[in-house]
Amino acid sequence: MANFKAGEVRVFGYDVVADYRITRRLIGLAPQDFNFDPFLSAEQILFYEAGYFGLRPKLARARTDELLEMFDLLDRRKVSYRRLSGGQKRRLMIARALIHQPKILILDEPTAGIDVELRHEFWRFLTELNQLGTTIFLTTHYIEEAERLCNKIGVIHEGKLVSFSDRSELIRGMRADRIEVRIKETLSAVPERLKILHAELANHGRVLSFREDRSRLNEVLHEIFNGGLTVEAIDVKKTTLEDVFISLTHKRS
Image (tube, rainbow, N blue to C red):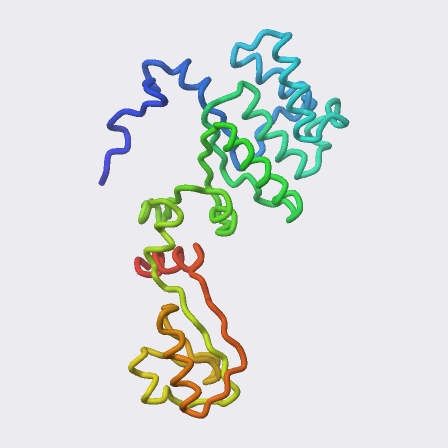
């Protein structure tokens, strides 16, 4: 069994043990579960958090106002945490993580339990934040979220990291893009002249599926037409991150 207590961790060159005060200032954390003081208002939560990181009162007040406005919480600044909606609590969680302007932001399921509109709003904000220079570590069960936001993606299965690479390389490595040709007729088997093109039947014999190769598309269509089949539609099915995730985890189940 691996010893996870061994080794060292450095953040921008600083040791997290020897230089813990510096490294903690470099990192902002927004956990999945809400862990606010239930007796504080939104404004107090941000202001006190700024104090924990050594911000002077004047700067702490300015950062609090800035983040309340950024996350559309100005009109809720005096409201107790307990009276905020789920989406407002989620926004406050991320605002608190950013109060000291960290270089690294760690987000654990940041859009769990919020509606679709707010999720897309978060995605836009996180994209802009990343473009401004903040490194973001994101854990998520939403495959679309990882595909939309992440440059590098790690896949964890049963507690083990089974893959870690650039998003594009991860998808490209599957090489599973396919061309699907829907035909009018219903086939019970792949015609012999199409077997050499590695055609597969799908959709109860109404679709002929080929591994994508645009240079051979004309050949595929030529053989289909010569066989007296009628083409109704052609669709290119691109490999998605969800396809990759299922493939990686299925192999290890």
